Length: 217
Image (tube, rainbow, N blue to C red; front, side):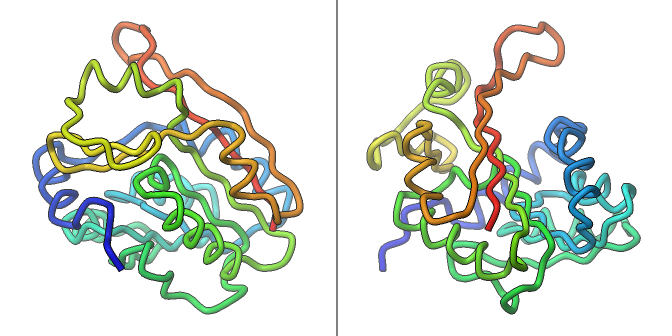
């Protein structure tokens, strides 16, 4: 099977160059109440990077596992010594290394939009497998409306498919429409979608546009 997404070395290089990438509580703060109300205890952060969101979730009282493709990111995350947290270095597109019904919720914050359609569908199906019944998958992915914004910062070197691109640093990025996400989660019990525009931290100008999805398995 041909792999159409960035190798782990691309991410190692990015983390080594850019350091401890952190969005603050942007992705986690709005959903902590939902997770508490649902009685969630054990969480998976899928594409956890250097563990900043894992730290926030652990501080909020959850037991958290962080998974990332980048060995460099995982080493940085482990060095933080976060209580109630563990980290796994693995390729999410190659099968999640967890048994069925392992987690009360899975979160994936701006990490699921790196793949072609078939790979994304496999990952989503695998997330459902490792979730306990009636648990939540909370995700943030680039929207179609983000592409023009991103092109002002990142040079596109190759079109890999419908709204799937490769950038000059080797990163692959997929931009999702609302309809695509509805199809992707068609066999889940519920899917709530919200479109968000994120402002630049310093200027307030539009910086990123994403979908926040909350799917119930």
